Length: 319
Figure 1 (cartoon, rainbow, N blue to C red):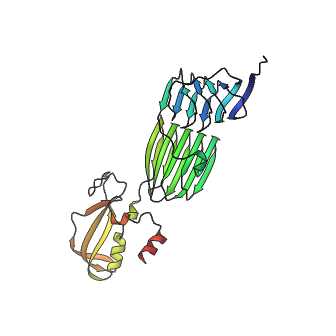
Figure 2 (cartoon, rainbow, N blue to C red; figure 1 turned 135 degrees about the horizontal axis):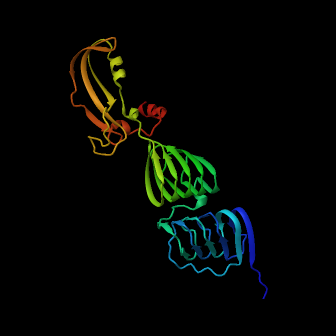
Figure 3 (tube, rainbow, N blue to C red; figure 1 turned 135 degrees about the vertical axis):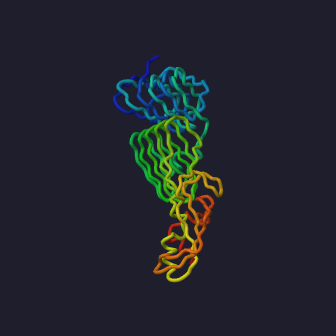
């Protein structure tokens, strides 16, 4: 019988995209990134330093002898599609997305394994931004599903988020920015050193974190959005004579919890009342003023109800 096995020497990054005859064996790569629905058979990762995965490590991977062996000066490997078994030998880090392997998955000899059995809610093609590779970039406006990224050092920007989104980030060094209003972000991390920057009108929940040093960088809620009438506006409107005025100012302490509702808060304001004699918009004599002003935050302030609206939209609602 003829020996049809293939030995390939390769230099640089490599992508398995279905063109290699399985079982495929990839030897001594640096990092390996495995996308969802990419391995059609069993998957065996041997002697990796780190394994980050959303796939069950069940120890049942039974990969046959390789028909295609890829070795050489390999940098990073990307598994996009393999129509059969795959074996990875002596990789540094291996990142495996959920639902990546049709068969069994084993990781004998791995020094460190970070695993979590959570699956994304959509397929890669359904996300507004879907990237695979090294130093990829992407953007979306008015998204409906979210972001799916597999690889390293992707820069992604999502604007105008108004519906709940999912961010599924596999690998390391991803930098994702999401801005919008009144949307919840569900974040999945599979890897390390990934950062999600979140605008002030969005809420974030890290659903799973199979890795380390991942970060949510949330912009604080702007205090000025809770102020219906500033001190200077109230004084200016008072004009001339004895007047009662009401205004709001930022709380002058560093409280992290709202004294009114008890929630952890980014923005806390005080509501003040004062009766004074005004001359050209300046109080020249004070008769009465509040000594224990009420406090409220972005969670309990009535002015936060329409914080998700733009100034133009707010005027439209009030008209």
